[in-house]
Amino acid sequence: MASWTDAASRDELARCRLLEVEAGGAALLLSDIAGMAYATAAVCPHHAAWLSQGGVDGDRVDCPCHQGQFHVPTGRRTRGPECPDLRTYPVRVRDGRVWVDVG
Ligand code: FES
Image 1 (cartoon, protein in one colour):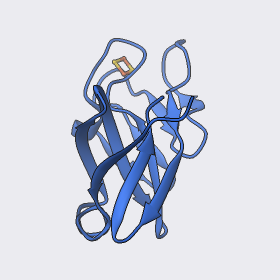
Image 2 (tube, rainbow, N blue to C red; image 1 turned 45 degrees about the vertical axis):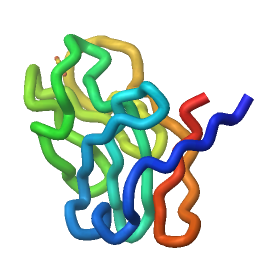
Image 3 (cartoon, protein in one colour; image 1 turned 120 degrees about the vertical axis):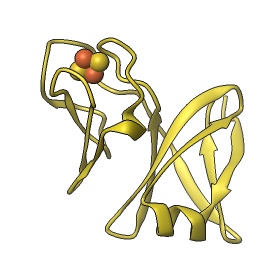
Image 4 (cartoon, rainbow, N blue to C red; image 1 turned 135 degrees about the horizontal axis):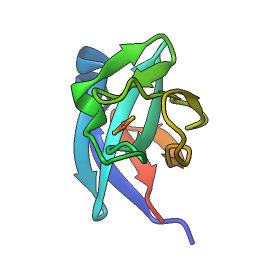
C-alpha cells in the first residue's frame, strides 16, 4: 500500500543535489540528477555507511567506504563489494515539495 510522505522542498534538493532526510520512519537519500528527483535508502546495503558522505557521479552515488557505487534511478550496484542493490522509492513532485512513497 502506498504511503506518500512529504520529504523535502524541491528547491532545496535542486540546490544541494543530495539531501539526507528522515521521512515516514525511513532514512532516505534524495538526489537531483539532471533535474529529476530520486529517493533511495540513505545507507549503503554493504556495511551501512551513510551515502550522503560519498557523492554523486553522474547518475551514480558513491559510497564513502569500500569503493561501492550504485545507479541512483534503479539502485543497481555498479561497483564495489558484493551486496544487495540499494533500495529505491517512488517519488513525485507536487506544489514544490518532494513526496516519497515509503510504503
Ligand atoms: S559500506 Fe558501502 S561499499 Fe562497503
